[in-house]
Length: 124
Image 1 (cartoon, one colour):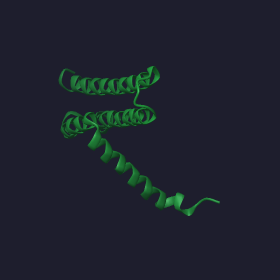
Image 2 (cartoon, rainbow, N blue to C red):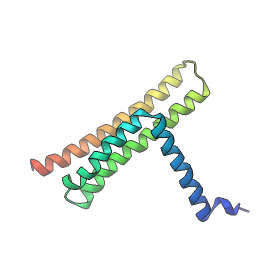
Image 3 (cartoon, rainbow, N blue to C red):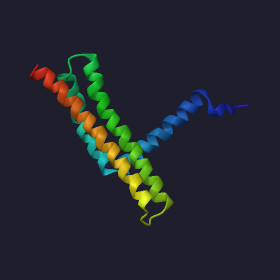
Image 4 (tube, rainbow, N blue to C red):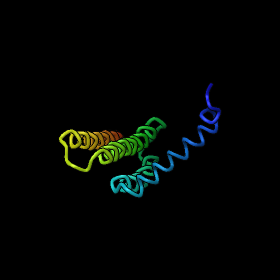
């Protein structure tokens, strides 16, 4: 039998609390996350000016949110690796490099998305 505290609104409330804790920790501990938040605070309003349809707004804003999501996952991988051991290990380095590469790719997708929509708006 399921614990009633693990379902429904109670679960949603606890999950939201833990998510907020994670966002606060990322803001406190991750300079890249703070930089991306500041950049996206400028880009999100700009998305409503640049985009001309709901689909374009979703693409512009969604690509920014995607970067933040990947950054959070990268930070989680780094924290787990650091928890396991502080000494250098080839696989630990590989895991961190792969997480960083994922952030890089997500930033590239965002740049391409914004660039193509801007190109279509101003050159098309």
